[in-house]
Image (tube, rainbow, N blue to C red; front, side, top):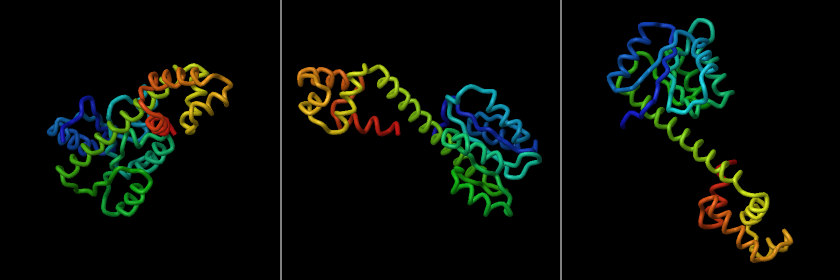
Length: 209
């Protein structure tokens, strides 16, 4: 699996030696990383930065002074951030049951200390690719929203009835316009939305929900 361009691995661990060792390990696989000595420092970075555009994941220690890794994870879940920025917990043996529970709540994975270097980096790469796929899906949804916004009010009205499955004659009756006018609006909707059928249009709009 090839590293992604501009992908970043955030290492959140209060142990400087652990952060340095993980950074070295990631560099050996051509992965960029950034370290944080506390959950608070990492959260402050997130609040100060613009909207996430590039793939990223978090290597997060469970137990840290101040805000714990679990508390930080809870905040990321509340913010809806864990799909775009998957979290891999680094845990001691005693934390494994807790880590398993976090996976059920959206954590990408957990690695028990001491962990296999290769296994950990493999999971990191999978997390980064999951992040990239999610961000690409979000960009696609935004493009669809922009296409919808570009439709006129009449075109949007026709579109809603098209995806409801109404034929042109019933759409014309519903909107009190001619069938020919419906056909023109329908063609414009398909063109602007970049689809070729009502089914394709419905599937495209369904992705926005």
